[in-house]
Length: 48
Image 1 (cartoon, rainbow, N blue to C red):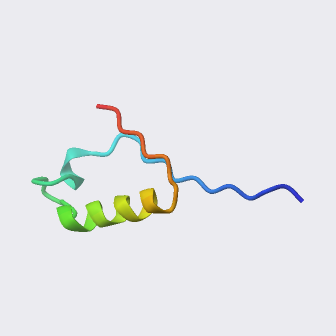
Image 2 (image 1 turned 30 degrees about the horizontal axis):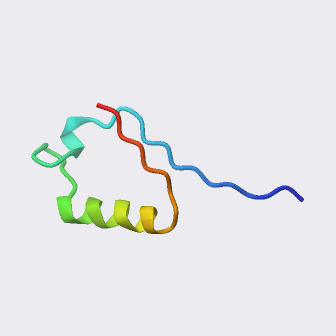
């Protein structure tokens, strides 16, 4: 049986969902999520 792989791909995140946007996620909450993913070995890549 082949090994299972998981992926989470976030593309073109709109400014409205970022800090200061009209639908912003709490900055502390998004940082905790990213830290948890990194702690689990996720490869995090950001491109501006």
